[in-house]
Amino acid sequence: MPELTRLAKRTRAFVQRLGLDRSGVAMIEFAYTAPFFVLLLGGGVELANFAITHMRISQAAVSLADNASRAKQGVVSGMPRMREVDVNEAFHAANLQGSDLQLTNRARLILSSVEVNRDGGQWIRWQRCFGQGGFNSSYGQQGDGATGTSIAGVGPVGRGISAESGVAVMFVEVAYDYRPLIMESIVGPTTIRKTAAMMVRDQRDLSVGIVNPSPTVAVSRCD
Image (tube, rainbow, N blue to C red; front, side, top):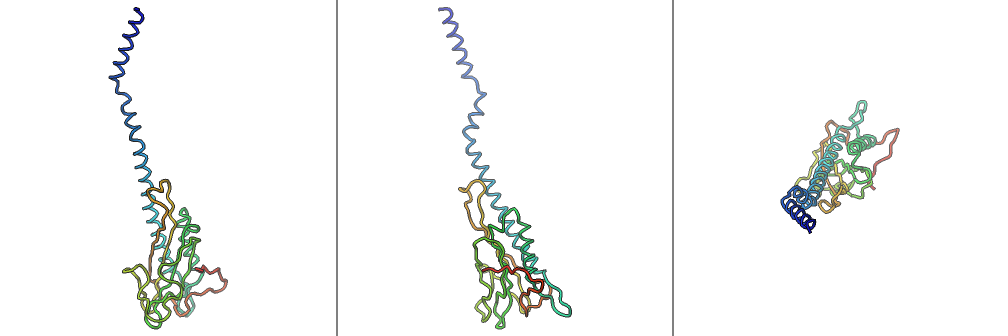
């Protein structure tokens, strides 16, 4: 009996100490809040990646338009011309800029030369494409607007661009297949589309369109 009494006393003392112990409260609270914390952290990472990808696709579009507006082949006693090799090099530069975005497989880069036709309307004189993404231009194909004045500008509604007589505009569209990093429920697979435009910086011989002098290169056609 004395041993049972001592055991009972020790048990009561242990239960009392256990009731007063608060050392596990923080761990229990963390266990309750951990799922919400992980959700917020993952969602923040996903949203940040989505925003950064938007910015980088926009930068790729601007860079491509800028490089295409500067490209030219000097011609002795004549005006500079735009060559197919210049287009390919501009695409290559854009691909290097976004190499980790896998632009070759997941995007479509579309470069159009917007000019003025003989009737004073806007004309997509030539158009070249890069990337295996299954996207088409949202604003027209090569040859659109060759005659007449049906096309007032090329680009998003209310923000279309138009060339001036004798000057071409390099218009760029980029469509990118965005895939979420970790949380598809926050930002699901979607298409990011960006546009950019630059006027040709120097004089360019528009009478010949785009040329492919020897040694010729593969033409980056959109078909």
